[in-house]
Structures are given as structure tokens and as C-alpha cells.
Image: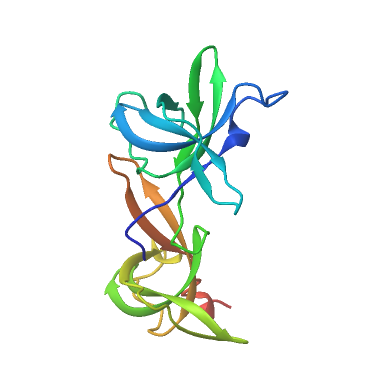
Length: 190
């Protein structure tokens, strides 16, 4: 679906703050070690774009990543940093999304791989009730949860449109897994 997984700032997950003292907009420059990054303060310019606010750099700690693994936030990511007891912290977690801002997307079943596994391709809406292949979308493997414990599998027909969810399997880096829940055997039940 996409190759670069974006990060987003989840400020609401941090402790609530009473005023803007000790709060800065920063741009991540590079990883230092673990979940610590070199960052630089940024501000909004007249046109609304961000620009560097000052020359110096600072170290920020990303609370959304474990301290004992190398950080994965890419350079040029902007975030809100909060001064907590003299340490600047951010909360940037990897977004579970497919490029359209959602962990859910519409896909077409291309082929059965046997059992509950299928090749799928992400779709875009082209009209009321019609879909087409999303430009640049790759074929990926997805698992039909409806077939994991019921029947012999491979029951979803080619061309079926399904709602797919992207899940992350833990690891470093995490592995993307795609699942959908199609009631493949519902037509046989009475």
C-alpha cells in the first residue's frame, strides 16, 4: 500500500498543560540514541509555512518509543515538545495507516492463496457503489478472519470488495499485517 509510514503527534496522550510556557513546536533532525532525537525549534512564518525559529538545537525524548531500541521517527517530522522537569518530550507514534489517513481501506480480492489468505489491491471510489484500483497501490496478502476456524477456506470470490484493516505485528521494525472479516459461508447457513 505505502512504503513510508508517517508519524503523527499525539499531544493529547501527554499530561495536560495549563499554559504555553514550556511548549515548543520542533522539527526532528536526527536520532541520537534510543528514543532521543536532535531537534530544532520552528515557528510559523508569514505565509503559514514553518521556518526555523533559532540557531540552536535541543534533545527531545519520544515517549511513544521504547528507550532501549533505535528510534524510527524520520528527519523533518514536526512535533509539539513539552518541557517536563527540564527534559523536552514529544509523543510521536507510528500511524497505522495506508496513506489515506485511516487504518481501514477498501480493497478488491484479486486471488485466493488458499486457506484464509488472499491477494488484495486497495481501491478508490469512482462513483456511487463503484471502485477502481488505487493508482500506485501494490497487491498485498490479507487474511479473512471469517475463514480462520470455519470451513475449508478459499471461499471469497475473486473481485469481491472488502473492508481491510491494517494491523502492526510487534518487532523492530514492526511488520504490517492486513485482515478483513468477510462472512464467506453465510450464504450456506440457514
